Length: 445
Ligand SMILES: NC(=O)c1ccc[n+]([C@@H]2O[C@H](COP(=O)([O-])OP(=O)(O)OC[C@H]3O[C@@H](n4cnc5c(N)ncnc54)[C@H](O)[C@@H]3O)[C@@H](O)[C@H]2O)c1
Image 1 (cartoon, rainbow, N blue to C red):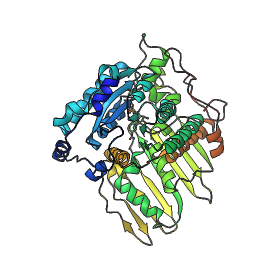
Image 2: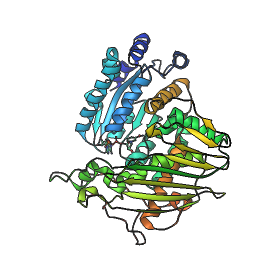
Image 3: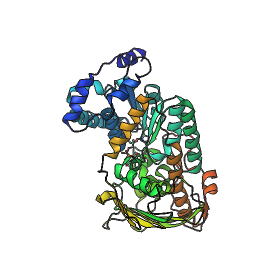
Image 4: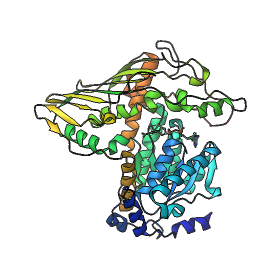
């Protein structure tokens, strides 16, 4: 292993080739040569070894973005619960890099057989063999993987949501603090935070162009996830649930946590990270086929968050086939209002006493995340998204808790909750139950 590591560290990627290739596909390396020059990578070589944990759709995309973000990144280790996922992901990443950087394809991807790890412990091998780790498994594993990565002093790209329960969020907050002390970067996958138009709009709102924000409403309405797979005889309960992870609330957090959390993050963002004091919610399951593989997740939620000073944040999300999709934010302030609809490319602006229109163009927010992460690493910056990524995930979890139980849930109750949804150890075999929550009846949330 040591000899292979040495080989990667001495790998020399021609800077001119990289920039030329990037420009050719319009995906220019966003890292300025000046930033690259400022900090050679530790150990004398500027090659950064990227490790991917969770080789699904998002992980494959994120790995490709990491390779495109910086001339001397190399995909070096991969891990997944299921071995066959690694091969599929690797093919996709190879095709992507051949398309954008044909001259560099072989140098950019060097995942030798002994650096492909499968099973529940795959994360350990990847972390050991990487400088930057991409965490893109189902959310239930994130606190464990993040802790291992920051304790090993790795830079991390951490997809949202960052946990599915209160204990997980507390662990993530501790990990964020470890990363801060270590001086390593921790970037979240809350991608709208890296979207140029959203940044411009939230900046204007934070400057007070709409006055004090009194109320904000966000939506994340879609037709649902992919079709779940029926159980096969050779699959244990755990394997089956993991292959359908979206549909088990203890793996995904339910769709309000797994998906709609993006729009709940807007509420956190607009109120500059202030935590809600409490929330009430409704939710249910009306359209999911009642078959075992659809697990125990709801298909609709509506939450009201209350903030100190009287402001309110409301959120609605649903997974209903044959209904319109919608992902918007409507904010009402003392001097104006703003309606943002980035899916529809709706111009970002503020109407009211002092109308304002943003000028930024839409950008590739996923690429932007990695461009900034690797530029930050090179420049010795300490990017740390830890607190907001944990708090936005917590807000979504507390909304789910309120909907599942029918109770008012305070921030303190949610954050200090001892209820852990995940098993003490991850093993193939039995799995936690999938049971539909009925508000007002005792049950774990
Ligand atoms: N920011 C965004 O816009 C965005 C978009 C899509 C997904 N995501 C997030 O990314 C994460 C992954 O989503 P996805 O769509 O790629 O799902 P996916 O199912 O396509 O990929 C997840 C992968 O993780 C693997 N896996 C499961 N348990 C594992 C474990 N313990 N160790 C290693 N690998 C494991 C699975 O086998 C699978 O290959 C989720 O948290 C999701 O919410 C974010």
